[in-house]
Length: 361
Ligand SMILES: [Zn+2]
Image (cartoon, rainbow, N blue to C red; front, side, top):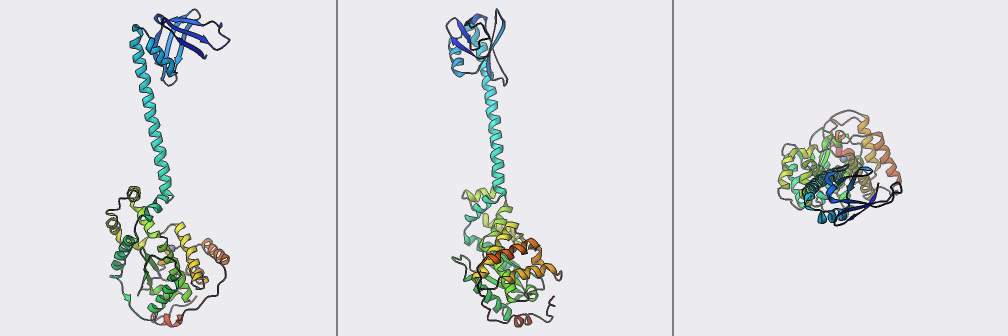
């Protein structure tokens, strides 16, 4: 029952707000009071006395009343009052502690979600200078090539050079100096390392029916570089603490740490969102470069139809029907541009690659 408390020299005057009481203020001398801590959460000051109506219990929470009570309370009540007040303080302190733990847990969860959605990773990546990325990519590139048979010249090298030139001159404000190397290997693969280091295997060139198919793969790979997807993967695998350190400005030792990942760069798997992004921006780049973008889709489709050779590229780029359909829809939405052919003859390039031409399905 709510009531009005007046703290006076002789004791308390209690006026009940409800009509169910007799309406008369009840005067309670300090001498008849006992004081303790209590209430639902043990954070109330509990005052008890016996009145003519029986035992009364008053739960005090209002700090003004409690302060007035403390200032007026006679000597015999001051010790229990101090003990009760101390108990209430402890309970409130514990509750604050619990709430700050709960708050901390909520904050950690929010950060975790944020990190999970890659926003923090992307923020960290924007703080890594391009030159660092180039150092990282170049060291993995040199490492990889030192174990490979590299094709230094010939029609295939010239053809890839022309494709790269057509594509890169359509990239506005391109911060990368792309470098492409042809590796003699029947593995059907191509990849681009952070910093713009591109490797194309002769197996992929033999498998492609047209130069537009190879250019499609190149355009996709270049866009992984331009969107810094590799760097995002690396930063993510380094973990939340490293990411936080980068965001907060401590980048020391990061390059060394990333270099330790070394060969992992070569088997880097991108996320589904990154693939979609590279597909879409890759398609747009082909369009700007006036290279027929249907070659890209065609190559993806053909690769997934037939299972021959070592389809390394396919293993990192699973081709689903949905992906092909989405690419076709994107292509249909782009403005039509009449393609300009390359200066080389693709059959001639393929013939230069090796003895057995790959059967065309
Ligand atoms: Zn990809």
